[in-house]
Amino acid sequence: MNIVTTRFGTIRVAESELIRLIEGPIGFRSQTLFVLMPDPETPGLKWLQSATMPELAFGLVSPAVAVPDYRVELRPADLAALELDDERDAQVYLILNRAEPGGLTVNLQGPLVVNPVRRLARQMVMTSSRYAIRYPLVGTLPGPAYATSSMLRVSA
Image (cartoon, rainbow, N blue to C red; front, side, top):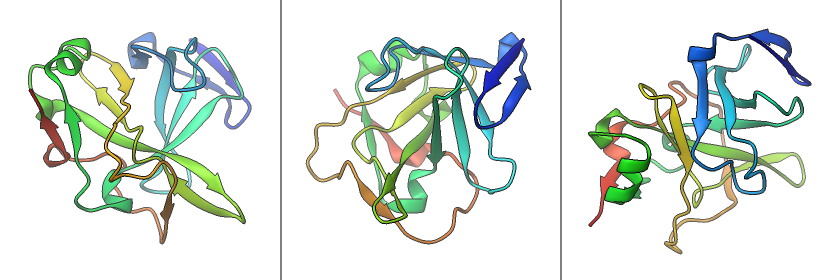
């Protein structure tokens, strides 16, 4: 299928490559069909591009880029919704935001958790006040763009 984008032009994607968000991202709840793709120029940066809204794309990076000891707590209901048998199979990304003047921040309270096998994702809403919504991102973007399973913890 062809996906028209304002950032990348028209991209060709197999339907099996699409990712369905259980709920669309915060502020875009009706948008649930996306493609996850690497940035063509910046290693460590990925894009979550809407399959139906050409202008909607979110920059994503690994939490390790911002906070080495970052942890996402998944409830058993989160695992079930994402159809994850084991949290170690998940990939975790942080959504980039533009900061004034000209910098970047990441949203530590709203990580994106992806089940790459089932092609399901959810933007989590963490209630811990220890993480900022706009945490300054400093430096370059190393690969890989997703977090390791050590950044996930299942809570009761």
